[in-house]
Image 1: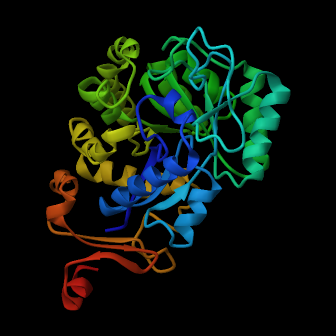
Image 2 (image 1 turned 90 degrees about the vertical axis):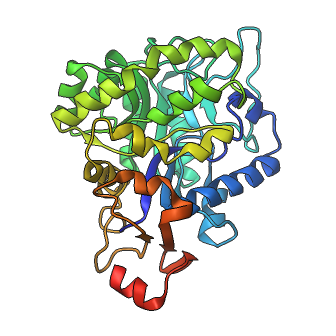
Image 3 (image 1 turned 45 degrees about the horizontal axis):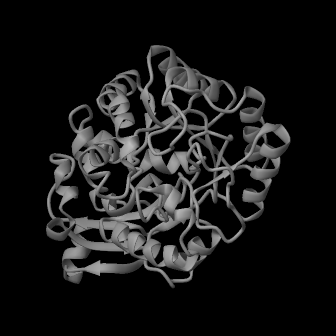
Length: 362
């Protein structure tokens, strides 16, 4: 089968305390990112899309073989308004210490001019997509889950700049109101979407947009977020979205929305990346979940003629699996037992099968 894609990762989120990442040496963070990416590749993920934090340096290190990891699509800094989901300052912090060498996940911009400049900076540095925060979030200290963020004109400016550079825009959003505003402005994918409703479903269909649920991160945060660095004061926010996520997935799936595999894990919780398959199996058939991590993800990445299929002319990203994931998707959740070979760009990353077995499996 083709290599897997994860459309929402944070390879530089070495702790669930995102404010702490800003204060870490970028060299230290890069070493953690190296290990995080190596582990992702060994789970069968050959392409991942970073949703804030990774940059051209990490992507180049993977391309040059300095890091053994999946192909890395990056946005650089995710973009947030002051006091938005990407603003990691507490109410008593007066300064946002950010510079070109910061290891943080977000940058703050306010107004159309600042939004345009922030987008152009990330595009200049080679961003594969632009990420904007259009609602509140769990891991931010001063906003509310149900808030909408960025004015219409600011969102439209981000879309205009990204589409002028022929790259997509991904938007962090939970509520239907935030989702609908973003889709009306031309955003290409909604990340999370836990609190969507039928009005949002209609907007997804009308604008032919993608939904990237990230259900495992809420379960992981509820079970071990504090131990992984999440500040205790943010825990109550988790309950607002954790139970709604599976219902949102069900609504979107039944309506035929284009759904993509994502996880959004932080810190030590990255190890739970494959559990998303299990959670989604309560709603989706195995083949639909697999498509979300292969063909549909490739379409979102605008790489549908390069990855996501086993076909002539496509990149040789291949997995040899012991078992039939179309019958039992949980086969994919035990890579130590069932993932016999991993091939990325035509080169073996892992191989425990003979040449004859490999030919017959392909």
